[in-house]
Image (cartoon, rainbow over the protein chains, first blue to last red):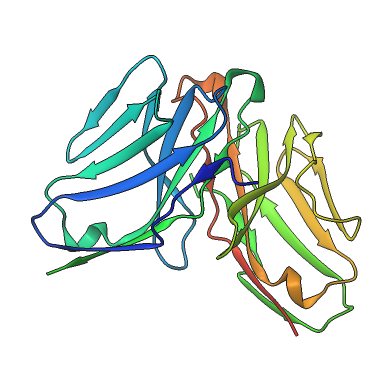
Length: 113
Length: 117
């Protein structure tokens, strides 16, 4: 049973436009959410996170939005750049899990020049 | 720091053979995680250690899988006997939540791509 779902396996966006990656979760105990980025032949790297006490967190071109009532979060990349082309994983955890992250299946973002 | 080191980077073996994957975490990190990545299930946590002690192995798929961490700088994931359905990319990650960094930020190695024929 997938507790963290990324329903779009892939997304293609033009350079300079906004990329929106979506993630849904089912476990209401999750209180911390993260996005990781993965290039081919490399391990995932941390990108941005958000606590459940917030509904938005921004870091440069990257913004994560959290809608707790809908159990949904999204990652916005503005403006998108070709170097952003990668697989993006959504992950979630909760206080009692002690660093145990539950990952989604990932979304492959392709930013076209 | 060299980051998390994994070896080998690629492994091709035949069904029934024993496979051992190796990981060296970042120095000073007291949590170590083993993940498996597949298209269907994404990144699955197999097992994790804290201070060399296994904390949660509920993600280990079968008894054919075992993991050890004999010391703070080395861990192994063993599959015996291996099967074609074990083919995946296996990642090791480490973290140190007490170091003042972001909560739950894990640092991943480059992964081992395992192919079982």
